[in-house]
Image 1 (cartoon, rainbow, N blue to C red):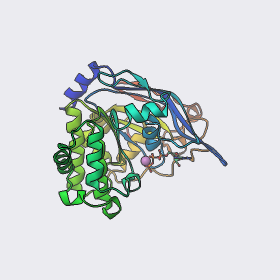
Image 2: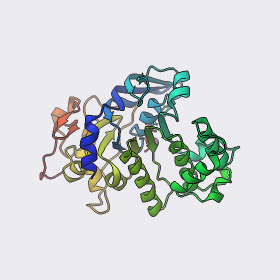
Image 3: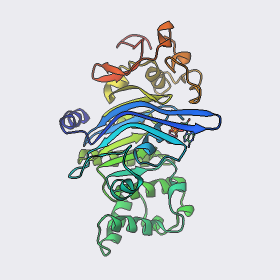
Image 4: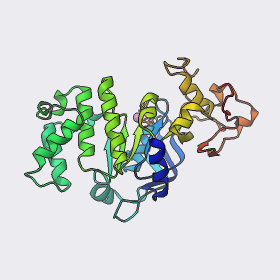
Length: 331
Ligand SMILES: Nc1ncnc2c1ncn2[C@@H]1O[C@H](COP(=O)(O)OP(=O)(O)OP(=O)(O)O)[C@@H](O)[C@H]1O
Ligand code: NI
């Protein structure tokens, strides 16, 4: 079914076209290469999962798209957003005023990775949700019923809405953050680890909710550590390593025949596969090697890997590797 959705979405113009997005942080100790030359297109109806080990740049990517990075960040490249019925905007160039008034929440929703710290502490969940709904065009009288409906959709009890964020468990705060992001019905949703702290049935419930939004025309960029989650709902999966996309392809193709040794390593780490972690650790983003950043951990590395591999088309996807795996070959 997702294949059919994918075919349809490719014909529509991209809702988001990211081209060469690069983020650097200046620190007294050096420069953090957080996102490097990242390109992707996201179409209405498409669910893209971004996966990769902790610290590879997933959250920085989401924050860069929303102009939410701190002052020590430099962002270059382009991120064209084509809101349905609205004027296209380059999210990298757009000023804070434009992003705050016309983009954040309304066109691009964010489920933040740490909702407990992102939620305003002095308002109850109900007040936050009703304010969000009213700010996005719901009549005052209709807001309470709409708040209850959205709360129920994310699996919140009405009683949970009457609490303050600091009174909520991590999983409940997570669901409130999801409800707040969904309330304005944004055509693009960036969901950064939206299932953290949830038990398995609620994880699946939340993932299916995101999938249904795509099936009714929205686009979702789902950031997750959870490959099983990506497999359940994503149309395509982008694998990030040390600030770059190293592989991006349709979900079934990625799980059946990964082309990048790092992707193969992530899949081998799954409990229902070899359950063997990728050996070693990711490099420091202040001190990246000149060539392929994965080479020190890669069983296939050779002299060729001293030259950085470019992300190039590979079958139905893209891969950046001098030793790409072919289907059937050992990882
Ligand atoms: N304000 C900042 N100043 C300096 N470095 C930063 C800043 N924010 C993030 N970083 C660095 O950027 C890199 C990417 O961070 P990011 O939060 O995107 O990782 P992530 O892939 O989301 O990891 P996780 O899965 O743990 O959430 C990390 O090395 C992080 O330390
Ligand atoms: Ni993150």
